[in-house]
Length: 461
Image (cartoon, rainbow, N blue to C red; front, side, top):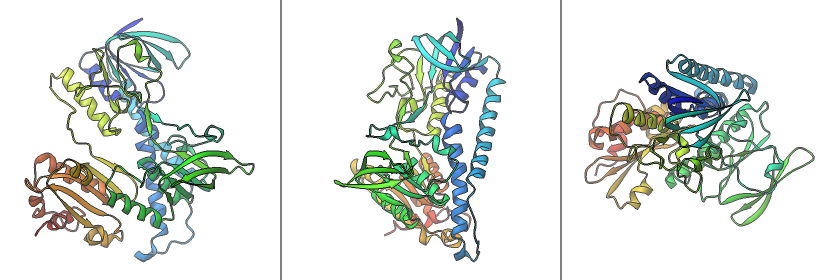
């Protein structure tokens, strides 16, 4: 049995950098990874999907170039080349991360599946087939999340796709049916529509991206329907059956009425669940919630002394950048004696549909629920000079401001490079810059950012 000062389980966006930092601080550290270095983000999340989104955007531009005076005839989508490029980017990121870990002194990278024996000991089933036990005073769990598979009749009888397996399709689906009208489902739905698939999205809520304000849902619905993507809301799939032809017959309940539709592929995108089931956490005293997510305090400590949880495995906002921020909080508290907390931290995010949706802070719905005296600034992208010049006026800019203090409380930018524009407002929020200051701020012309002047001009009078 080998003794370490610290053991990190999972090499995602928190685990990898944390293991390196702990080792460099003088702690003898082990990093346990059952699959590939980099976690979901690098291997089957952000990196591959955004690489493929770029290919889908190019197909869209080719198909819609005529209004800009460029005629492109008979272009085609080469999925094999798209996959090849995606794999090259993934391998570049993964290999770079692994080399950095392997070259770090005091750090052992161990490939295998970890299970707790007690709160200071793990058993690792090595990928080589052997088993080893390791002990440590400190444990950091960064095992992430995986696709939640709903219990629907016949689902296990079809070769359904997840956000991982869809990345390796060898052919463009003839008709892709997506369960779930939120961030993952929408990104893949638009991507494969642009690759040439017929796409149908089923969402059980009243509208897609139901966590967002209603006007955002409405605008995204309009954008998707303009690309001939079918959207069913208040709809669930109740059974699946594979036909002799190879197609799949799906019985759906649409707003209380039953209907049958046929498709060739099914993507499950109804949510994700934390990967804690094989950790044997009951041996440690680590508490989990009803979904299996590890409970932590605001310093990311679990209910078991010396055991921390970071990233998606603890529930809450499931974003790569939140996982990375978790690492910085834990490391600085432990090694640099800081007193940092994750309470009330900003949670910016961007959905990489086209156009993007960049979001930070309070939505209008949340501001209303809290009883805040707020104002809404809103500017259609059709009034943004840069959007008109580039030929893409879909979406709008929106900001929620405190009517009394003039502070910016939240922003939603649905438009070209919406995430980049959102980030400007995020920094303004962090710095306490009021909307009035941005109203008169000098931005370079003619950037998208310049229209933040006009966005807040809408609040005058």
